[in-house]
Image (cartoon, rainbow, N blue to C red; front, side, top):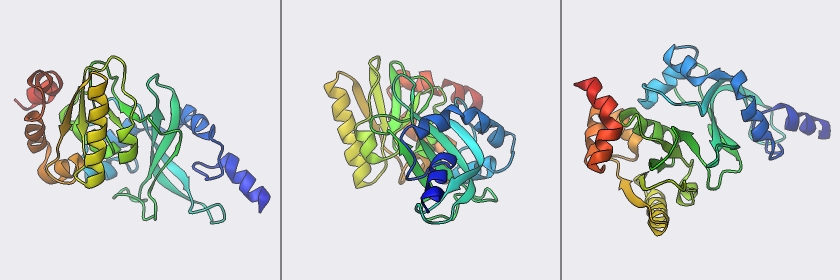
Length: 257
């Protein structure tokens, strides 16, 4: 049994026995995985089908994501391992250094998440860090989930965003020193509201203007799935500083005009 556990700790992704340096080794080898844009926009394997269910179709600036066709998953150290397709996201700090990884396992036919007790798992050093899309400077948005933040990017394609991966992590997210205005895309539940309030309070205490982006439903991904991109765009535009609406929605607006 000891040798079996030792083999797993060195050869598989996500083992509870894996050393903390393993996420760094994994993500440094991520270029060996299929780039997400290849699997998604070119309709290779499972990416497009999983994306279609989430409503997220327009992807750009997604270098933090990769697709792996056979990512290991198991319940505990003594259970048999399984392999499933997975989206793997790198978690980075403000300097862009990889601190962890987040995996979302997909069903084998690409119709949605895998039928597992925990189809999502994260590992590594997550506190204060996140999955980043775009490079933040003076304005950025932050939220909990990857799908939530990609939904936001679907209608605000130029806005840098960060997914903190949970409400607790969102409340303690590290903010860039160049930041002047922060939008917090909160989930519509008690934990999401508290996390958004705490992050906004921290931002304001640091001299950063902070605004909450309130969803129509449970979160922005639910809005995108249920109402569509046009309705989500209009809903968010009303909550943005006018200059930011023009700056970050220009691409989407011109594409619809």
